[in-house]
Amino acid sequence: MITLSQVHKSFGPNRVLAGIDLVIPKASSMVIIGGSGTGKSVLLKCILGLVRPDSGTITLDGEDVTRGDRDAFLARFGMLFQGGALFDSLRVWENVAFRLTRGRTPLPKPEAREVAIEKLRRVGLGPATADLYPAELSGGMQKRVSLARAIAAEPEIIFFDEPTTGLDPIMSGVINALIREIVTEMGVTAMTITHDMSSVRAIADNVAMLHGGAIRWTGPVGQMDATEDAYVQQFIHGRADGPIAALR
Image (tube, rainbow, N blue to C red; front, side, top):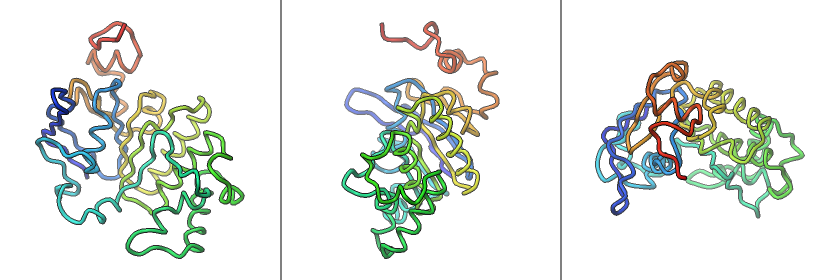
């Protein structure tokens, strides 16, 4: 569904992406792994068109992502941000329904609220949560609200940026299970950026490792542990010694 071919991106002398080739099949879950500062977020922003590559092509269903109706293009995506990115001044249901109440054909607020409550139910939050403000929620509940917002408009593609950051192991497991269920039930195409190997094993169909500006390895998650690539092995096992240099 998404194809990247020889995508390059530099910021001044800093070459971040140096020839990315990657295919994300439709209705599958791709997880991108790699160390901090390797360009995972830049790659995501290039797909969304927030950053324009210096060269190479990115296509969605065969169409160049830099062309066509921008609003229609973005309407196909949902996004779970690393920090949740909820609006503090809006109630929970208003956060979930934010996209629904704006745009070319906004839903009336009563209808948008009903959709929001249903999506909150889908992520395990009751109707009483709808009229609370984000500051009244725990970190895990805020993450669930963010997930409800990501699926509220029934997107075809969902991006998850470090979905378990700041959560304890139990809540991380809950969020991973919700993501896996939602991706499977909705039949969406998912792309996740994460350092959390438990998340990788829980939500991935395929894994790609980004290192040195290129995709070092990609394949089904079931083959990840068996690969002989020393970079992958060092990363997934968190070893200090190996070809990936650590700051000391």
